[in-house]
Length: 382
Image 1 (cartoon, rainbow, N blue to C red):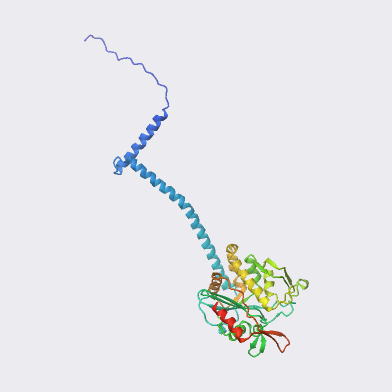
Image 2: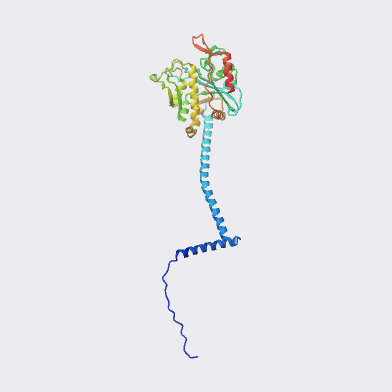
């Protein structure tokens, strides 16, 4: 030993300035880390070194999920829209049935005894007698209008519907027939003598066909139904009528120039009730029945419109109070469904073949047996 102590070597320390990594270095590190992680996953999942294959599979799966999300969004919207439509229709049906139970007026009890049995109106052929009475309010000043009792039937129309059938036949109110215990009378007098039951019995016997149901229009509630529908569009000739004495006497005057008009409830009721058209004094009951059938067609077209779909709950609630019928709510729904499912039949009126003067001095219309049988046969084939 030399006895000289060993001293530790001296080092000079340098502090390097921090340097940001280059972009290619960062990308390389990221790529390496990614493949290291994928390789690790592949090893854990038993796929060996197939990291790149796993990546392609994962990318495909992610693409499938993206396509599913893109497709699922419109599907969800469509399903929500269908659910909303179904709920809206269901609400309307429920309101119709509730209104039928609480708001609808039933005919007199003797009507059931004169009607023939029939199947459900939507699936089986049914003959339905539609009546509109001329009975008015007690303070009415309309010439010839009845203010007490049943009143005469201003509207007499037969509808055949259900099971694919579609036919209508209007009977002029001035048609003269034999009414039991009253002799030769205008057919609209049957309603005056015995209400809807007498009308059903007399018409059924005279035409020789079964009548399964009766529907009488409640004129008091009819305008509310038309307004709930948003009105109706009527196309026809000039009409001027004065109801209950006209506007000058506190009644109502309807003025429609020839053409197309959108009618509210009060105007539609006035059209249905028009007895004398001052714009065309030579019009007969035949033209009157044609006007009524045209109004019926316009109501059907309005009910099948897109606008009525949005008004469906209001229409459903106001329809039963405007109808006096022996049919239950379910049967009325079946009738409306059958009418909607078939095209509107052509306008048909039981055309008279002659005239007759009654003992009262009134002029009436007659129809031969041959002509009546031909019209009835055509109606039953409809």
